[in-house]
Image (cartoon, one colour):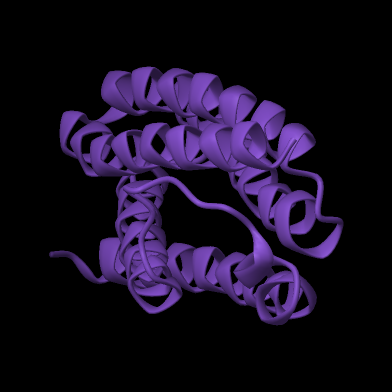
Length: 159
């Protein structure tokens, strides 16, 4: 790993973890009172495991973004890929706000569906720049699909 790649990946991981930290802050109101009172599907996971998986996803996302960024921000494909990445990261953070802080599972579900579509586009653009970076985002895409299923069932069971 080159020094440039390490620095850019570390910076990108840091940015992703900041978004994760903001998600933790957004969840604090809903996680203690509202979320425990909801009916949940049989396949939901405990909050502790949920947090660990999100941290892992943010690290993978950051490394992938760092790999793409190391190819040179001057290149239009790199810029396009990173713009997609940034937009999906914003939608990712917005989900925590919608679901936990505002307690709006349906709006959060719409956000997740949009997020998944954007993650697919991001993977496509990352693949153009670097195939390894694209592969690093595939567990995240699968995780978002799983989150869509959980979010949908929570909305359905509690509507």
